[in-house]
Length: 122
Image 1 (cartoon, one colour):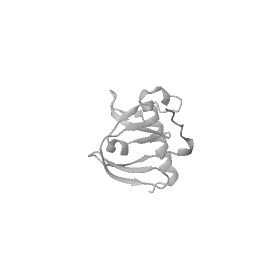
Image 2 (cartoon, rainbow, N blue to C red; image 1 turned 120 degrees about the vertical axis):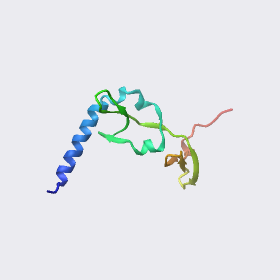
Image 3 (cartoon, one colour; image 1 turned 180 degrees about the horizontal axis):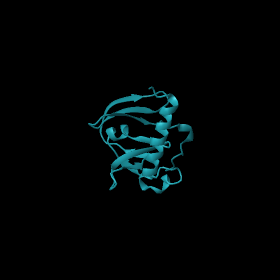
Image 4 (cartoon, helix red, strand yellow; image 1 turned 90 degrees about the vertical axis):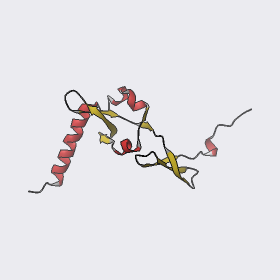
């Protein structure tokens, strides 16, 4: 018996709701978690393992006492590694390829628009 597309999305939605109940990832609770506002130190592999719960990226950190996984919402992270490639772009931004030993990550430094810079006075 084949699963229909509708059944597939039903299962996915119920998984997201279950994750939301474990993380407090409801939109009105996310801002209460200090991890959401901090630069959380992560490895590139951790970034690739983030799960989206109600549109919020969450990181699995451990199993709780009830043997259920615990998740925290993350909006910013701190990556440390070696820059293995640099690609300047035409729009004054630069793309860096970062290697931390667990994987590779593209990092973008937005270009500075001279028109909107605050003039420096001496």
